[in-house]
View 1 (tube, rainbow over the protein chains, first blue to last red):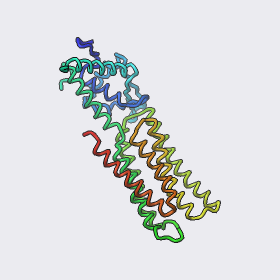
View 2 (spheres, one colour):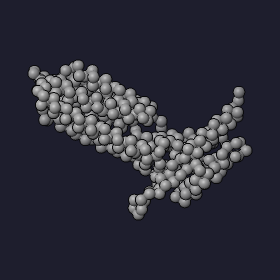
View 3 (cartoon, each protein chain N blue to C red):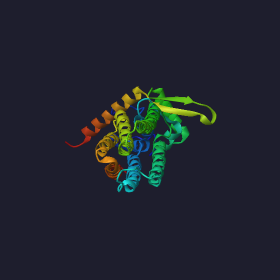
Amino acid sequence: MTDDGLDPVIHVPARLRIVVTLATLGEGDDLAFTRLQDMIGLTPGNLITHLRKLEEAGYVRTRKSGSGVTARTGVALTLSGRSALERYSATVRQLLDSASPQ
Amino acid sequence: MNEEAEMDARNAAVIMQEARKRAESQLQVRHPALFAALGAVYLFGFGAIWLSVRGQRPYQGPSSAALAPITVVGTLAVIVIAIAVGRATSGVSGASARRRRLQLGSLILGYAGVFALEGGLNAAGASRPVLGVFGAAAPILITGLVLAASSAVSLDRPVFGVGLWLMIVAAVGAYAGPVGVWAVGALAGGLALLLMAAASLVRRPA
């Protein structure tokens, strides 16, 4: 955790955007790597690096299917990732509340 | 922004809000497009049919020429809806894609059922006015039912509201008779949907 109690895996702008974007998908859905890349605006290499960190933490899962021109990599938020985002959002709200003048 | 830069809680909140807004606007089917396409079918398609049958005594049904506008507008509506759905769902795979296929299948089967029932009613000796009421009201009812049922799964209230409204229009329109039902469909169905499309466009976040 950071000094503020925020999850360091999520507390990076690019990873935060990735996790929030994936959280808008319905349960049981995944998003193609290329579409996620378009939406987040990262290079493939950067996106892979961030996804690897999220995957190591168990927050996202990637699944490859097809081959050749039909090859597709789907990315989805896991239940653990969804819970982590909820905890992160709650901590951010608490920090903002405690910082705002009474 | 530097991707590894320090960010405080305020930055994080802004990033979360922006990312959520952007993702929702890109991954959800645009209501204005859906409502406007359906509204145009009812307003112009049903409106043209109403214009062709409004003086009929006794009721004979729409002429072939009067069916041309609904065919053209219906085809355009299918294209617009397909583009809107395709844009929003491109790259999304899983349960929602399967749900969409089932919804589309239900709608197609529903319309096929209407034609089959109309044939059955005709074979059973139903009069032209009865066939006219059924032919106009039943497709509106089917569309409303499928929209309401499918939106219940995703808790999409605007679409549920449109589905409910179309079911009411179908039921009320049936009492307006074989001529009036087309007018009710065009005005209560078409105009209301176009107004809802405009309202969703205004409410839509930038």
